[in-house]
Amino acid sequence: SVERTLSIIKPDAVAKNAIGEIETRFEKAGLQIVAAKMIHLSQEQAEGFYAEHKERPFFPDLVAFMTSGPVVVQVLEGENAIAKNRDLMGATNPEEAEPGTIRADFAKSIDANAVHGSDSPESAEREIAYYFNDNEICPRG
Ligand code: CMP
Image (cartoon, rainbow, N blue to C red; front, side, top):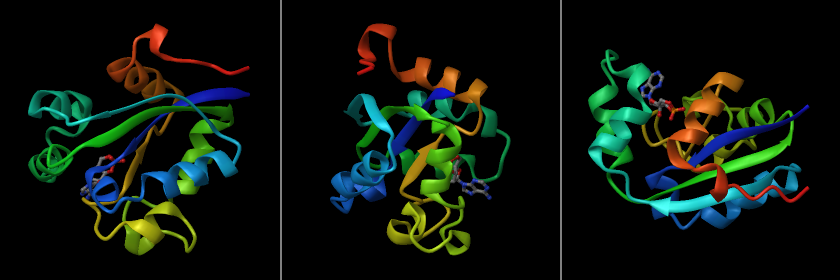
C-alpha cells in the first residue's frame, strides 16, 4: 500500500554536499518527496525526536551529532515507502550496510550514518507529525 515515511539527511551528509545524490536515490526508487525542509535542530528538538533512546548510552552523542549542523527533514511517499526507504539506507552501522546502500556509500560511523528513516507505520506517523503540519505535505497523486 502507499505509505509515508519520515526521512532525515543527517549533518554529515549535508556537510559532504550529498543532498542531491541521496534524493536521487529516493526518486529513482519510485519514492516521491512530498515535504522537505532544511533545519538546524535545537537540543530540545533533537532530544524530543529521539526520546525513545534517552536511556541508551549513545543518546548524548546522538543529540550532539544531530545538532552539529543542518539537516534535511522530509516526507517520502510511495508503495511500501517505510521498508523501501530502509532498504535504500542499509544497516544502521555502515560497516554492516550492503554495498550500494546510502550508508555504505556515504556514512562513516554508526553516529554519522548519513540518514534516518522511520522503522514502522507508528513511528512514521509520530515522526512526520513531529516536523510537519498537514498543510506542509504536498501529495502529488
Ligand atoms: P537513527 O536511525 O537516526 O536512530 C538512532 C540513531 O542512533 C541511529 O540512527 C544511529 O545513528 C545512532 N546510534 C549510535 N549508536 C547506536 C547503537 N548502538 N544502536 C543504534 N543506534 C545507534
